[in-house]
Amino acid sequence: MKVANRASGGRLRAAELAAVCLELCAVGAHLAQAGWCAGELLPSEVRRVGCRVSRIAPRRGVANLRGRFRAWRHLRSGHEPGCHLFGMTRGTVERLLTDWGGAESAALVIDAFDEAVEEIQAGSWPRLQPIEVLTHLVGRRITVCAPTDQNERCDLAG
Image (cartoon, rainbow, N blue to C red; front, side, top):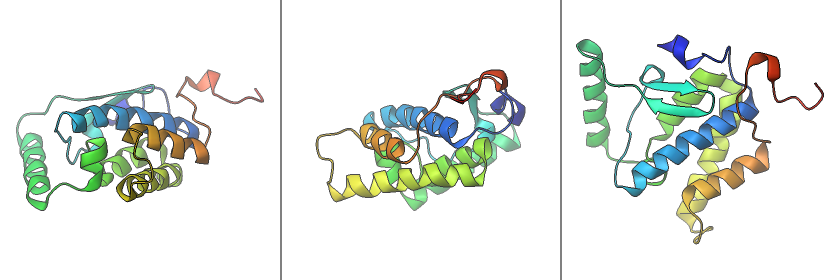
């Protein structure tokens, strides 16, 4: 399944990874508003095509048992702030971004994710939705650029 995650070729750059993170968190925020949490997802359980993300149906057999155990463990340990705001744990976001873009690019975006969670919990942005706060904080750090084909990257100097 990892091949499907990299259908557009190679690792994403930080600007592209930021766009994917915003889409991922927007989908998760809809879950959170409905009272749901995606929990602990692995990269093999999420399909990414360009900027769009979707969950792959659970497999049968051992992989399904492992997924059910992760869900049980997550429920037992309790939800974290990321679950309540963006519908998924920080660990899930970090795992997915690291798989799609590498550790350095993911670290830049994860820092903005952490800052957004802290700012929202502190009440610094009372009138904004969590995804709006995250969009602002990611945009302050990096210019967001949607993933494209290898031949038509988002370089302005091209």
